Image 1 (cartoon, one colour):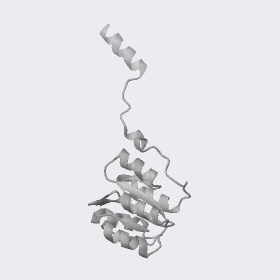
Image 2 (tube, rainbow, N blue to C red):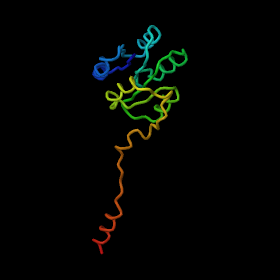
Image 3 (cartoon, rainbow, N blue to C red):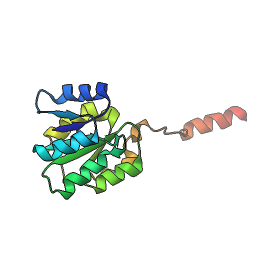
Image 4 (cartoon, rainbow, N blue to C red):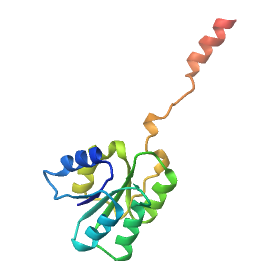
Length: 146
């Protein structure tokens, strides 16, 4: 697996998560990752979408245009639906960075479809405020004013 993460703490954490069952090459920037991408066959490319002047999608597009036989996973610190859709169009899976340490082993060991078809805007649906009141609450409030 080729991991591209500029943040040292997150990179170390992700390497620790998968070290026991996958060989990990970790890079900090686009240029070194591009060199490793073409010098050694990897099964997975896992990259942060933010890589200074470049972004992880550049690596995904390079791998795709070179017809490398590897799966790609792009992640981001901050939710960006547009970039998530672009990653999916490029054939990559997309994951928010906060769930990556838990999700990464599942990506590496699961049988996955060809591409990520999940809707990026619905990723954290459970965390959304559901709002509103139940009808019984509304009735009780109206009766209290009567």
